[in-house]
Image (cartoon, rainbow, N blue to C red):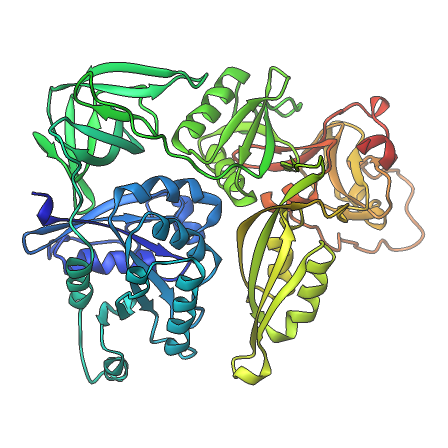
Length: 621
């Protein structure tokens, strides 16, 4: 049976057309019946994935070509979700490397490809978006070849087949000289050449010797009907419904734990759906129900003699962030004000499902420290919890340092690759260099006719916090921004953070336009008239270094004496609406971000003004 199986993953940078390609693979393989409507980007199942245009969770689907079933795993294209990538590589035998015909291979492509080559996967290069007016197909192929060499690919991996595709029009070809014919409309095509390459290049799954059942749990899902579902590739043997098998896992302390259970149901992927089957055999990617305590990295075996496989190992976290119960006076008004037990359970559930996240106790009973890979990973988790109706608070993200062999302080370093209009290159370079970045590469410019340049920087992870929104403002939304963790390097010294203080409300009430008008000269306001505030809530940014306690609720005194001059209608000149990412960058160590389903507020950790200092050195130290 394993001869009629192929397991492949799709590797691509954000927005290079990966999910669109899967749409057309499913359509052309007959997954959707003629009467069925299929939404665009069917693999982006989470609302956040559709809104942001990125893949966050690794997902599975399958197509049938003749008698052969092709299991397709969609991998995230962003390095912040690297934990998703690392654990699904063991499920597949080949990879489609999808590269934009104009942008070429970018850092996240490099990150996932490195993992794939290390696993010895066979790679098919798909040059997508060949219909772009700024496409540079031959140059991109050469760049990709250089990338393979740079990643120490072996001779067999470097000899990769190339497919030229336009995923949104649903055609591809393996012949470079046929591309122009398809673009001019002289030829029509399909994705059959890609299916043929997969069947020819990707080997059938290797089945380990022995009859005993063995499977590594690489992903988890949940069903309201059968409970927790364990997803993974069957490495050897078979498993049947109602069979008694053993879970080899670990407890919270890291000690081995064995647990036997009956398989209640078995599923396999048929198109986008899970189809129930009586038996799963080696080589296939399957789903097993029957155990509620399953975790990613566990091994399922059929007999007492079955040994556990090495657990999935991912790169260590680089950033930590405190999650806390919401203690503000407005707690519970806009969402569910959860107790510490419920917050801990929600974070533990996330840690179990995402091997790139870890959790530590912070020393306070209602605060928990989450360790992760990047700012975007935390922003996605916070947004998910908001949409589930939770209220909570988060602190300033802190980079995790290491100590070198000689006792020196080391910090995580990243490579940032920027693709931007040439007119913004000077401002962006100054902005990055102020964050201790070193420019390592400058490509393009007026000579290439596109008016765009590509810059590469080596920058401390600290310097990237909040940089994405600033960068998009500097490039007027036209810049592309990608990062990749390089490892740890010497500490680069202090970075410029917020040099100004905050405007802090000195009482509870509702903001009044008259009161806010009087504060405009003091700094930049974050709140509009008619918004609830409380003592210790931050309503704006002060012009000066120190904090300033102010009254935003002050109403105009009304008298029965007519003014000698006619009143002039005055309105607020402008309010800075702070997004979650902007708030994460803005706050200092003595401040919280209060997150509710409807609002994102900034506040001081100590609310009472007579208990907190306003001088910067008193606040931060």
